[in-house]
Image 1 (cartoon, rainbow, N blue to C red):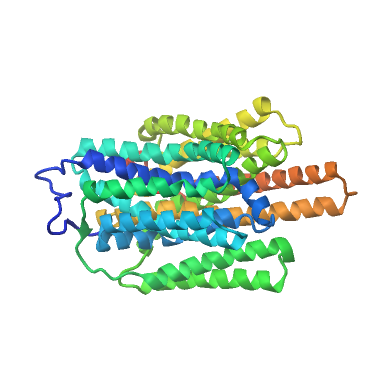
Image 2 (tube, rainbow, N blue to C red):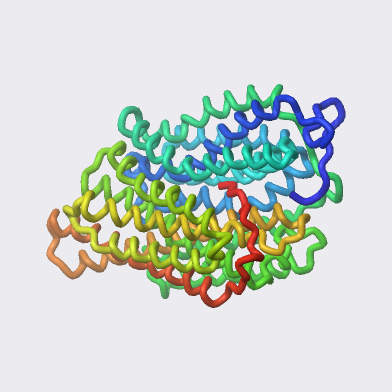
Amino acid sequence: MPGTTSTTPGTPDAGATTGAYPRRWLALAVIAVAQLMVVLDATIVNIALPHAQADLGISDADRQWVVTAYTLAFGGLLLLGGRIADYWGRKRAFLVGMVGFALASAVGGLAGSGGMLFAARALQGAFGALLAPASLALLTVLFTETRERARAFAVYGAIAGGGSAVGLLLGGVLTQYTSWRWCLLVNIPVAAVAVVAALPLVPESRAHGNTRYDVPGALVVTAGLVCLVYGFTLAAEDGWDATATLALIAVGLALLAAFVLIELRSAHPLLPMRILLDRNRGGAYLTSTLIGAGLFGAFLFLTIYFQVVLRYTPLEAGLASLPVTAGVLISAGGASQLLPRVGAKPLMLGGAVLAVAGMLVLTQVDVDTSFVTHLLPAQVVLGLGLGFTFVPLSSLALYGVPEHDAGAASATLNATQQVGGSLGTALLNTLYTSAVTGYLTSRAPSPATQVKALVHGYSVAFAWAAGLILLAGLATLLLIRVRRQDVPTGGAVHMG
């Protein structure tokens, strides 16, 4: 994070090099719990979504807001959240983020309408955008010795990698044996324990320097992204050539252009353009955005397909979604070893090829597709490709970055994944809805036709997801020009 670190009077010196904070490992445990809560919340609702949709009467066109409301707020406000945490106080930001996340979860768990659930998810994302960078910054100042910091970040990274699997399993258990609402309400006791433990265990720290925040930039970029997603959503109902659809997309693009102008002229930009204008980093961020766009929506449709078409229980759907995570964990370990010898670009290109292959296999799903012979290998191949992509992406995010921009560069990578996921989910959901409608209008209505229409929609969504990942591979091929020996092997830690 930018700036130098200092602790407030009367608190333990978390960042001193002369003596490490004695309760830093207990503080790590508290921070790890908070990180797990933020990470798993991105996947836990995927399993619960079909039940929440039926309970609250949410349409197929609007259901993507359960995912995109969270990822839009999280990705759009993440950079601002990191800056606020640095200068407002990291412990204070951590506590406020935890309490706010819990309150938003309570609103979502008690929601009586789709709109209320969408608003609660957006609030979760906003408070998560404050909580996640505060957690990462606290680790940075708590662990100053090289080996200890490596161990701490290993724990943090393991939670970031395994949190999605925990979310899938926990979402299945809670939805099947209690209610979909507990997928949100479960955050309340977790947050309460973390807050009570953080008060005595986590020290305060903040950065010196100018504390001005680029609030206009944060508001403009978030509004622009919301307009784009809303425009994509309206296209499912009114068509791509509808006046409202075109107007919203045009306004969204104009706001994003205005955001660039604001950042270029701001004395304290939310996103320094020098970070993006480097060819290798810019290529990495574009690749990250396209990968996120292809994956988030595809994962959502896969879990819905398991439950709606194959009639899996929520727990079975959660278990059936785990092979992707297993593939990621396997290939991520291998990629870490290969990166210094092979370089970032070959790994990312190979990863894109594998991910596209896995997604193309998923386009062949049917009403009775075998899990063992079809869905399992497709997910493993997809996961292997993602692991080979994510590890070098994290390294390229810090390629050639000055120390004072390291926090912004790492946060930008996480933001691009969330923003890409938001736009991709909305786009794929619109394409899915249009495909289902087109299939039904050309055939005689029947229960069998209805199910086949859904499967056709999933296939179309998976095909477009494969196309987005292919574009990510092309971005890697054309934009990244980095020598093997220049890439840092430590990588950036993901915050979401």
